[in-house]
Every structure is written in C-alpha cells, then in structure tokens.
Image 1: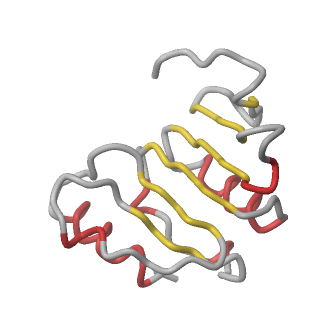
Image 2: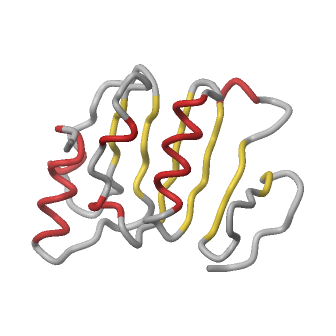
Length: 126
C-alpha cells in the first residue's frame, strides 16, 4: 500500500533523483507539507500512527537516511522502525515525550538490531 504522502518521493526516485539531506517522517497526527513544491529541500512524509505499517510500500526510502519525529513511543513506531531497518541506510528517531531527559535513538546499517541513545554513544561518521 502506497501512502499518498510518499508519492512525490516515489516520483523523484523513479526519475533517478534522491532528496537532499535526510527524509523526515512525521509520525503521528501531522499535516502533510507540500515539500515537493520547492527545490533543494528535504522530503517530509506525514504518517498517521494508525496507518497499516505492515502493508506500507516503503521502497522509495531504500538506501536513504531517515529521521522520524514521533510524539510518543509506541508499538506502531517500533514496527515502522523495524521495517525501515531492512531498507534504509540509517535512522534517527526523535520521541518528543522523552524530552528533556533524552532526545531519542539512532541506528546505522551494520548495527544489527542494536540501537544507541543519542545521549550514550558517540556516533561515527557514515
């Protein structure tokens, strides 16, 4: 299942282009920003927490670095992260309910199933 919010990114990838910078997934109750109307900006995808995560077509994200902003930690968020780990180069996850104690967690390809807190480990350059 392809989310409408992912269609501009799919079109960009099919044309042989990648977005500059990271792709941002705003996970929760967010409005979709029409990022594709401007050139040279990061892609932003609004994704509702109630979306059928297991059925989403995420191929447009293959090989990209992805940042997720979520209002809260949830099973749906972790299901999305687990799906993305099979396709993306790296993940930064920012969970707003964890502030100010923690910013979130990160994962890079090659770390297996292990995640690191932004607060705990120095990240090596990718």
